[in-house]
Image 1: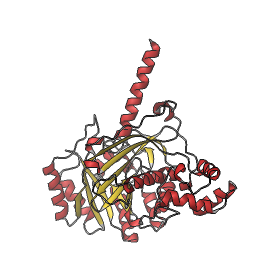
Image 2: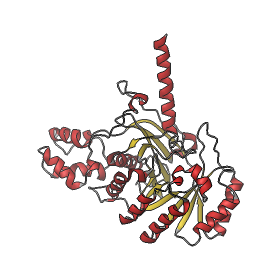
Image 3: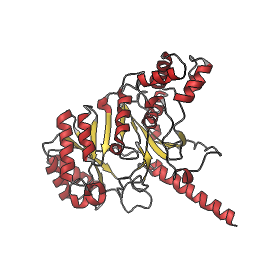
Image 4: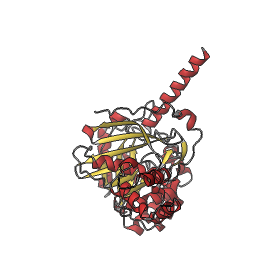
Length: 392
């Protein structure tokens, strides 16, 4: 494992413990706007409209986030435009890499002190970015590090997009070992419940898939949006006429257990959630990915594999089994490999396409929310130590 240097936090930057109590949305950024909106914003600053295309080409086409590198803009115009349309949204405070550089995780501090994470994963034929849509999460799934933190706030469109642009720049630099130098896929499987931040996530998807210079030019078919099963939002997604992949975090095929593992199931039961997922698949022709974290002695019993197989038989769905990445101090643990293999065998025997997700990032707190949780713990400990010194 390679550990990247921790980027020092500015001494005049408020600590996370104090600022996370006062969440606020960030200033406007060009990624919040479509091209017409950027042209209007540029014109309001007294600049010619074509400057919007120049800024957009740098940001989306060349993956340049540093205004100083935009040398084709006159200095006076550059300072004015970047101050108004390219504010700093994400400050990296910890970056780590493992898998010989093929997996890279970044912990970001937002303008109000909130913490989010994103991950870049390289494969021989593709590079995938896993991004956050919220700071924290309000879904309270007990086995998830992010769910244990609670929700701080939604991210803006630009805060979501800026994660991807940064990671696309890392890929373009050749830093992802053994992979193509172009980001090709984005999964909304980082911190947060994407469909709980619905309007901004959908707008971010449109920005990522619009051709440059309006957007990043990714294929909609290479975007995956996950959900724990917010049924009204799932049905709303159908009407968007997007061809993104829908990933449903199911984790249990029966309501008794899913009520515990995914508390939102107390509102929308397994049958209703699956109906919405199957409707999405039927309307879009896109196979739904059923995410299932295998947890030792909790949801890995053979009869649950058989039940899941019956629920999905003949449907346009694929099961993505996830070996649980345990979080520190958690009672939850990954299923043994023989149990995992039997679960896979039973699903395939039922005629359900099934794969086991490649385990990445265990050495670098790879489970979503672990770096943020660690940073908050350290900040809290530091604050307590400082208080003790003052008390003395």
